[in-house]
Each structure stands twice: as structure tokens, then as C-alpha cells.
Length: 226
Image (cartoon, rainbow, N blue to C red; front, side, top):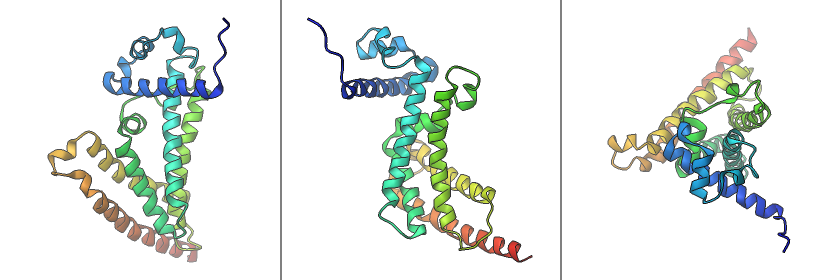
């Protein structure tokens, strides 16, 4: 009996399962301990079967990262879509980031915490194009955040892209520190229920950066009048 080819939906479901199991394996074994043979054993299939869905280990890894950043971007968009006020959108973006990072700790750690290959490691290799796609998805999230920041500045403020990028990095550093502390349980040694601090953390980040953005607008206005 001739075996019917898998539908696109079935192929995608298999790919999703392979990626999910690969992520679990990377978390448990570390990136350097991750191999396609170990993954095949975990899946209960022959290693060569995985290559029907991914060309190699690097493509699988880059697809994992790309999917993670696409999910983060969708989380951002869903959080701000009902809102019109720029500050409310910024607040929602910060909240969405923190909630994504703590709810999806494994992929978050792969995206932001673990020492794993980055785009520059693939430049000049056959995987450069796939790495570029992953990098673009990551930068799209950063650009979204920068757009929310820019919208909070006074109209007509002559603020440079470098100024806004600095503010984005500053806020990200605060958010990432909290998320990483939750995920690696370090904050458990500093507070009985660190996850309960989320609202206060977000409020403090917003208060701090509200003042910084106002100051940035004022300083840029002064520059433009000189």
C-alpha cells in the first residue's frame, strides 16, 4: 500500500514537536551537549528522520530562536493594540516582556541568557541566511520597543536615534535582570515571593523612565533652539 504524503499541517506539527523537544534538550543538556542523535533518542525516531524536516542542527536551533522572537513580537502587538496612549502602550510592552519571559522561561533563556551562537558566528557560512532571518526577527522586537519610547517623547523633540536606543537598552537591562532572577531562582534567596514584585517592578521602571523621557525631551528642545 502506497503511503500518502503528509499534509502541510502534519509536517508543521512534526516540526513543532521536534523544536519543542529540542528546546527541552538544550535546557537540560546545555547547548554544547545538544546533538541530533540525542534528540532522535528523545523523540524515539532515527536521527536521519529529523533531517527530513531540518537540514542540520544549526537550522533547527535558528528556527527555535526565530520562532521565539516572533512570539515575543506578537505578544507586544497584542498587548498594545487596544491602547491609544503612548505611555500606556509602553507600560503594556514592558509588562508583556516580563510576562513572556517568566511564562516561557526555556525559550527566553535561549533567546537572551544562555551563551549560544549569535549571528556573527554564522557570517560566511551556509547558515548565514537563516541566521539573518533570526536576527531580523530579534531586531524587529527591539524596533517595536524603540517606537513605543519615541511615541512618549514630546512632539517635535529633536531626539536622536542613539538617544532612544540608549533608553531602550536601559529599560531592557532592568526588565532582563528581573526576568533572569526569576527564571534562575536567584531572587528566591532575596525575597519570599519575587514574582509578587512584578507590578512594583513595572511601576518603578515606568516612573524612572517617565522622568528620563521628559528630561530627554527638554534637553533636545534646548539643543534645537541653540
